[in-house]
Each structure stands twice: as C-alpha cells, then as structure tokens.
Length: 202
Image (tube, rainbow, N blue to C red):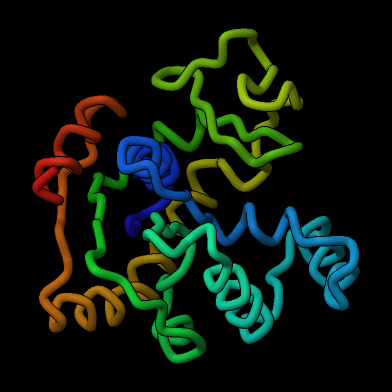
C-alpha cells in the first residue's frame, strides 16, 4: 500500500486483507507491538514514545523477522514500507503488486485535520468519513482517540512536500517492474475499496 498522508492506505489495506483472508502488516503497528523480550524493545519503545524515527536498519531486520513467520506464508498486505529508496535498499520485500492511492493536497488537509488516532492500537478514525461508534473511543480496542499535534495545515503541507520528494524515486522503481497499480482515492472508503479490488482483478 502506497500513497500520501490521508489517502486511506491503512483503511483500504485492512479491508483488502480481510477480503483476501491474509494478514495486514503495518510497520508502525509492528514497532508499537514489539515483544518486551526483544533486545531492541527499550530503544524502539523510547523512539516511538518520543515521536522519533526508529533506526531504519533495525526496522528492516524486524520486518524481515516478522514476515518469516508461518502466519504470512499465504501472503500479506504491507503498509508503511517502501516510502524511500533507502527502505528498498535496506530490505526489498518480495511483493506481487503495489497499490498507489492518489488524492489532492486539499483532500489530505481535510482528512488529516479531522483525523483521530487510537493512542493504544494506532487505529485511524475520521470525524467525517470513519466515525467511531462512541465519540473519542476506539471501536477496535476501547483506547482513547487523539489528534496528532502535527495535523495542522502548515505541518501537513510540509509533510506532503517531503513525501512526494522521498517517494518519487520509489514509485518510478516500482513502475519499472510493471507491478504498480494507481487508483483515485478521493471517494469514500467503500468506493476506494471497490476501485482497489478492480485494480487487483478481484
């Protein structure tokens, strides 16, 4: 799953994983749930809590360890990797197809400024499109929903600029392999899911 902030990668990816009966793997969720027994637990946990970036080489190792589990032998939907060419060089995950969700900068701003994230499991909600059953409470785990401090218009535009600069080369690389499918993600989660299934011939 690829695309700019607010495009619905997590939502569409989760829906596809459920439809295909395969696991959904998000690097952020993987890092948040690293075992306390792991030798890197403290370092990873501290970086996540401080809002910093976990050492990329270590993320690559953790992801490769994760994907070797029997759970993924029949396939998986991956989100949160292949954001930069450094990701590809650190660990080139064997993928069959890359789905690129595209939206306008205006849509990103609208979605992110109304986005709410579960402080416990990382599940994403939105006060317009993906409204939780109980306001401020995660449907999935009952955790508290919070608004990220960097979800202001100025911060969002800066992050978008960085995203486009960093992923430009990755997108061209995947295009050259002939496995990139691009879809318009401006619609509702249900509409985007239909387009994703069509793009994947499901």
